[in-house]
Length: 351
Image (spheres, rainbow, N blue to C red):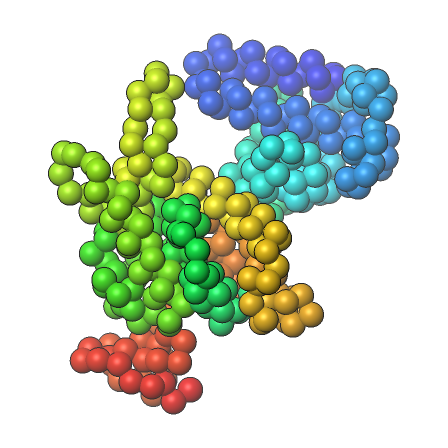
């Protein structure tokens, strides 16, 4: 059975079963991308390079697509190279280069291949890859240097960038998922940005100067965004930076609380904009983040994970987990970048 025909039959069966439009779109995208990957591999070998993908003749690719059997998409050999290759963004659309690298996209590809195999009465493909490989991020001190450099820049604040820097400050202190972040209230941060209630467990954290400045700047911008709203006080820490229109044309003003998906989109778009900003103004890149000084195995700031979930997992994998109690610190105390907080105040950390 040819894969192109099997995919269309699978999608028709899914639609007849009452599947949602979003699931149908996701499944169509994932399976057609897998078919394209298999067709490219027939022309260039497994894991084609970006140059090979871009240089492929459309007519040759179409003929190759028609030749791919369904069993090939479910084979262990195909799954072993295809899922990691696709998760690296090899087939990403130019307008959304980071979308294909998300954990959700990786899960969708694996689930689609399993569903297609089941529909075609083939053995389920091995579950070898569901997310892009994690890489350690830059050390917390380098993140602090970045925040200090950007918050010290004498320029009018850009709301989206100001919000992103505050998110990085919070994540550096306490890596939290999008759901925990959107649950934060403005009261969780002090007015000067120096203390923060951890979004994961409510502990009181003392932020270093650059992080504190980033949070303080966002509180100022946030206050301006919510000032024009009516209907009650907005307590959410993270709010929209721009107005927008719903699909039905309803206008929504800036300053509305972000929900989980909105928080994820805000980070992804903000990170792309930050990369462009620093690429255009390299003098803003702190000395500790210059390529020749970034430690081996670390990820430069311009390559920070493209999604909040990957950022959280990378921070945890690199040992940048939630600030915890350390030996020699009084009970109830926590340590943050050279300082320790106690139930009654702060003191220099002997470490």
